[in-house]
Amino acid sequence: MKTHNRRKVTLLATNVILKTNIDIPSPSLLTLHETPLTSFVISLTLDLHLRRNSDKMATSAEHNRLHFNDQASTYNKRHEDGIKQLTDDIQERRDWISTDLVDVDTLELGAKPLRVLDYACGTGLVSHALAPYSTQIVGIDLSENMVKEYNTRAETQGIPPSQMFAYCGNLMKVEEPADFDGPEFFDFDLVFVGLGFHHFDNPALASQRLVRRLKSSGKIVIIDNLAPDHTGFSKESVQKLFEDAGAGQDNDFSVLSRPLKIGRGPQAWEQQVFIAKGTKP
Image (cartoon, rainbow, N blue to C red):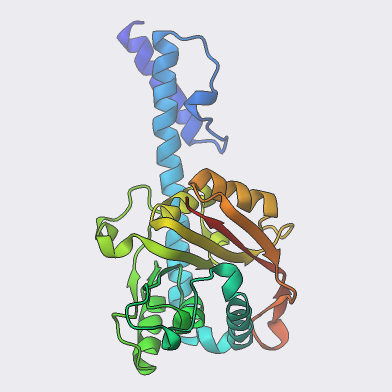
C-alpha cells in the first residue's frame, strides 16, 4: 500500500473512532481478512481502545477522588446508622468470612497473624469491624482526605500504625503505582472491599489486581449493591469475577437480611446489599 494512501486511512480511522461514541472492539474479536492493511488497522484500533479506556478510567477515578475528598470530614456522621449496621453484619458473619477471624485478645503467644487489606477503605468501616479479630490491617483509598480521616480515627482510638494504617493510592490504574510494590502490600490473608466495587470502572481488573495480593488460601470478600440496581451485581456476575481472577474456591454469596440505610434525615434511602467471598487456591 502506498505511503500517502496509508496515511489517509490512518487519519480517517483515527477521526472516526475518536469523534464518535462507538465501542471499539478488541482486536481478537475482529474477523477481517489478514492483510498488511487489516493488521495495521487492528494495531491502530487496539492503541485507541487502550487510550480511550485509560482516559475514561482516569476521569472517573478523579471524579470519585474529588467527591470523597469533599465528603470525608462529615462522612461518618452522615452515615452513622449505616456504618453501625454494616459493622454488626460483618462481625456477625466473621466465621462465614474466615474461620481465622478470632478475637486477638484470646490468641496464644505465637499464634499465626492475620493480615487484612481494606481496599477503598474510606474512613475505616471495614477495618474497625475487623480490628478485634486481625493482627494487622492495611487500608488503601484514592481519596487523601478519607485516608486522613481513617488514620486520625485509628490514632484517636490508640491503635498503632503497625496494626492499622491507610495509604493514599489507586491500584486500578492502567499501570499499577510502584509505591505499592513492596512485600508489605502482598500476601494478605483477607482482602475486603466494602461498598467500593460499584465505583470501579473495570470490576474484572479490580478482582485480578486484588486477588494477586492474597496469599495462597487467602480470601477476597466484597459487600456491595445487589442487582437489579443499576450499580449492582448479581450472584452469577460476582462468582465469575472471582473465578476469572483466580479466587474460585469456596465461592459463596449471601444477601444481607436488612436493607442498608444510606444517609440520614429525609434524604435517606435504603439499599439492598450482599456479601460475597472467594478463596485463592
